[in-house]
Image 1: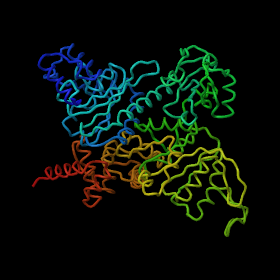
Image 2: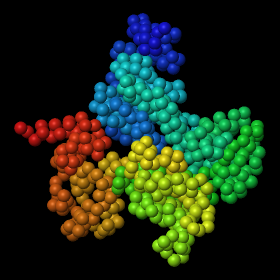
Image 3: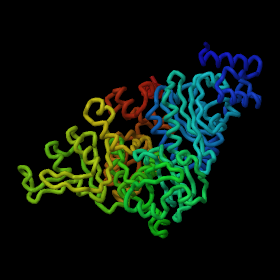
Image 4: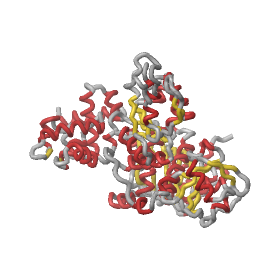
Length: 615
């Protein structure tokens, strides 16, 4: 029996020799795509030149698709971290097949396909033949194209899987694609790409209906806040405005068209459902054909604000800048989760702004209680339970008179922020897990009490490794990361300029800095991220002349830029490599680890620097 690869090879031979596409040798999606390519007279042996749009066209396309691209970028970074291997790229394209942005490792960028898969490239089926991205936009469902299934042999070294992303009204918003070297093929990639596309679609749905009532429902309560849940948008009178695809599937057998009344779908009167939602987060619903669900109104608090207040923009949160598209998407996810009181886990290197994002989440939650930060690494192990949960007077030697309510109780009605959660002792993790089960505080020697706490955690540790080493409980992680986000390093953000101005305004509002000086600072590695930059700017203000920070002042304190160059991306990357290489005393592996690049990239940068320096 012929293998798939052998069947595709025979089909290609038939196509190239006779111009026919044999139906029995190809899967249905590939067969129909090859036929379409042949119908528009694409010669499989002579592909047309790749269409690469210029910067102005790309910029305009990004502006037209700004919202979906912002949502996609957050999912792309997450997706890349889950499935990345050798020669891997995650890309998002407009409905007409133009790549708007991508996340790729260095090995892919420098590979033979790196020049073809880049922002501005048009990957429509009509130009590039059968390919996952272009074909998915036509058939409007996920498509996998492996190796020689590509219409043009020059793309035969790739395995690509793409999922279309739809707007709430059903039109195509774009296509999400994951492509890799054929040898890096991963079977679970299809499921992950489909989940990421669904997450983007849900983001679009929530943004379009953020001023309407958003009902999430599922037959099982544990799935109400997952991708499996149905989303239903209704107005304040209970008229149906829209449903996502999952909601239509859950309500099969019922007519689900905009304009219907809530009572035409469910047995519970809408006003009764609305009133009960004000008293408890989840409640049971039964649809008109007898299916039972658990439902919640995601944005009840925000939609019940007075219209005048709701129309006003949200106040900026001091201490947090989010002009970078990926960070903006993270902030919106956090705001949504905070409104639903979903536990949030924030990952990121030291100094990336984890506590500032946690404080933003607290502000977005609208809770009236306090924001209580707890550094888990700084709590003495012998007293950590007493510090968190409190104790009664005389419950142990050294207990203060009158006892203590504990940090968790202090956060009642507000937010508890557990920083460096990865450093929490294993024994206390079991106690915290019990708290998350029933939200009952058990003070040492005192009476139990219920608390209402919004929980946000943060870590710069690799928790997966800690779990394997037995230092962190996996069941606790699953309770903490209902939403998990990762803040990028400062050097990976696109809003360096805005961050500098924001920090400087907080340090010394009367001090100014030149654009050239900011460009000078941007090429430095900043291993301490935003915290390091803040401290350095504070030093600069002390040496500023007439309230002005210029390149001379910066150079006098920290020396010239790592590499005076033309300012190209290659020059900036080389400057960063050289700076970190110097800081690590010439350690190639540590330089690569800090910068998140391959060792070969470090060697190339060092080699180029030696050539520039001459003999």
